[in-house]
Image 1 (cartoon, helix red, strand yellow):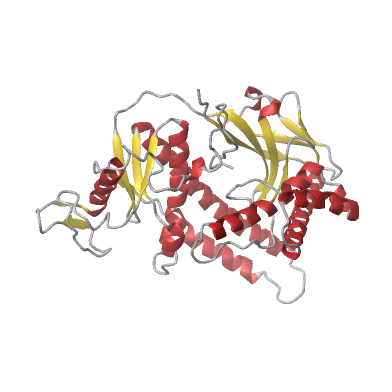
Image 2: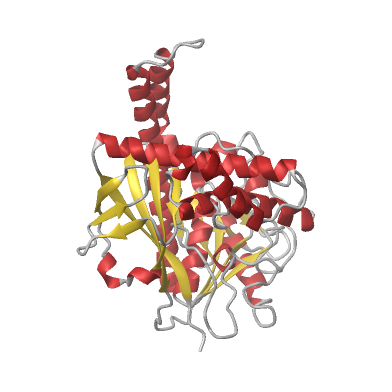
Length: 418
């Protein structure tokens, strides 16, 4: 029997002394140094593999004392890393570049770049130890991080220590966090609803389904834009030109500005998460558009609104919850879904300003987004019988790295929290 296992991420706020925070910053800088050194080594030598980068970590530790202070597995994590969308380490970035070249991806292939502002350091299975109450974690390398108190709503006592595969310390605008990557079973059996829905994502309505239900676009960035601009002006007034070091007031203003952006980002993520969970719980089959958001944001007239909508975040959570609860999620091509009539199938051209679909052939009248959602559902149902959820040849984001082995165990697969 195939067991649905995945990497789930639990995040806790870290409480410590100022000297410990400085030690974490030093560990992050060392991780960045090793990552950039590995990238330079790959650029200067042809045919370098990830095993060569692992060997380079020992050479760097022998050459630089501050690199030797970092845990050996943390050095290897900086060199090789994991195939994570949000924090790419050296070899992961190189591997992604190779994959894009093999797939003949149009445009830039994502050539690896040197990191200038790293915000995390990652430990594997050594260099740290949880307390008996699981309310504190101690780092035993020579960086001097010591024991950190962790505060959060999750309970680590539910999991065995062996299930914790990685521990990451992350610096954000409002403090420091500890993330635990746990290998756990995530599949949950639920009662079928016998419902299928098609979803159209837009800017006027964030979501519209084939049944006429709509969700208004929250526009978190637009609502906070006035405060963000004011905070940015206050930061700019305190900036010193030239080689002079910036004042403490400048760094305080910069931190206030960053915290406001972080709040908007968290609002958008939580909204997408709750909405995706609600959609998955209410339906057994969910069809949505396979939007090329990277290409859409090149439209300078709509780039800000598209970025504010958070379509990619919603899709990631939709696919993750679909995997978790055993629901079918299907991405269909978005071509002409808004133009074609869902009643007769004829193409009815309309501009973006036209919000009502009126078919001159059959007389069908419907909201533009609802008509598109109906077309999306029809496209999904026409493929589900013979191609399944991978109808168009590309794995959804949750399935990357989650290919099941023959003995029923899954390989590393990360949730959107990672």
